[in-house]
Image 1 (cartoon, rainbow, N blue to C red):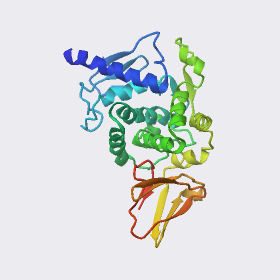
Image 2 (tube, rainbow, N blue to C red; image 1 turned 180 degrees about the vertical axis):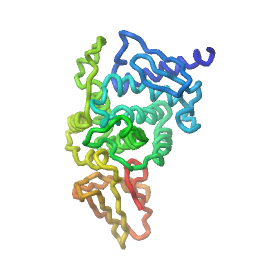
Image 3 (cartoon, one colour; image 1 turned 45 degrees about the vertical axis):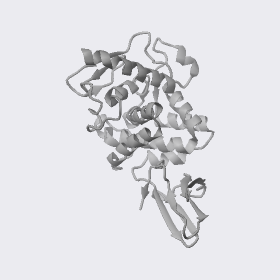
Image 4 (cartoon, rainbow, N blue to C red; image 1 turned 90 degrees about the vertical axis):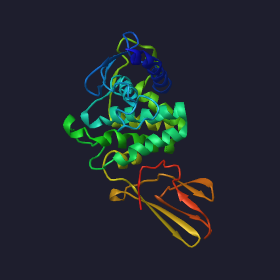
Length: 294
């Protein structure tokens, strides 16, 4: 009981974070409850099942990121899962990828960018790339329920944030939860809605003013990661994206030369920049890009 009481301030801080990011708690006319269970956890509208025994690392293979990751994840589903619900099992990453991304985003908001990157680095090795995150064909719950809808889904959002920028990305997160800002004041259930991956593409495009179908086509519709080919020859650094079927993939790439960071445009999927033979060069030094790189 004492541990439960000590947990209350953290619960309130998690709620505060989600209202900052995704909008008002959807079911405030009812309640928010936490029920301790003998199994790890499960999202339920207005009351989550929680079985972490107040162990911050219960969901993260024993790694303590400074907060209760299980509670934070299950609470995220009140927005991404219960407020906005996947219209089809094939779009389940709208629940799990978004809820998983909330943990590093929360770590960043309370502890700084290094904590965010540490959490992203924890998730990266758990991506398998065996099946599409959001296939076009209908899937059953059993077929779609794989680790990649969690970890790869979160990394896709991480890279999208880099691509469209902070303001547009934050707007897209909020508009997935509440497409109509007027619904943020509604508490009777009319604010809930069913969404598809195409809906989120439209939301991200509206928020950023950019065409993004190429981004989602590569990252969610097929399993293979884009391959960033890097070659240094004399006074030039060559960058080239290779993607399945040779699809367009103009994702920019950060390159740091002698400590100076620049974003390199890849409008045709490739670019060349000048470097001196003795220059220290690092590609994607802040690890924003979900990619295969040799």
